[in-house]
Image 1: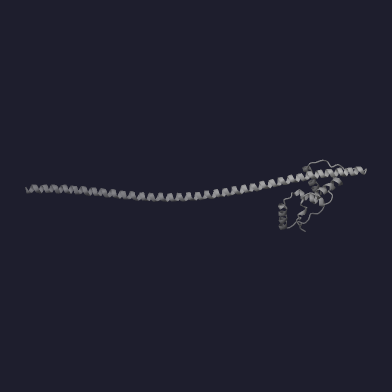
Image 2 (image 1 turned 120 degrees about the horizontal axis):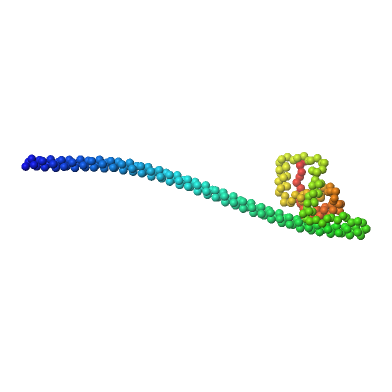
Length: 235
């Protein structure tokens, strides 16, 4: 009986030892799985950190791009506003020039009528006195008359004569005089016509004295820039 009990105890101890070995093996397996899970968790944390860094970098890039786009849009809007303002200024200048040309042509037509009346009066006086009247001035339009005034000035300009050219001004005075000339709102041919009027009879083979006096009278009574001071020439 004691032997049987001992054998039973030995069998129980062997079973306990086998169960302990199974528990230890299971514990080792669990420890290995724990290490694997710990490594995977570390890798996941590293991936999460990398993704966060990439997201922050992308956000910074997006912010920079947005700022660049905003600056570009503001610059484009500013350029567009400047271009519109410049266009309006140019349109105003063109309209002002158109009004000036219209007034000028109206004045020229009025002067043409006065010239025709003066010519008729001179012809009547000459006919009453028994003398041949002045040569007839060919009827011409305002543009043709302006072109003739310019041609007269070109023929009588100092550049076409034998007079020596005046000494050139210094660059500063020349720039200042150029600014004064450019800032003037009167056309260039008005100054030419004034010079033509002030320089005596025009050097023209076909212009008669009567026509020259009529044109000079028209230029004296025209709304020219005679009241404006002339720019001083350099010595």
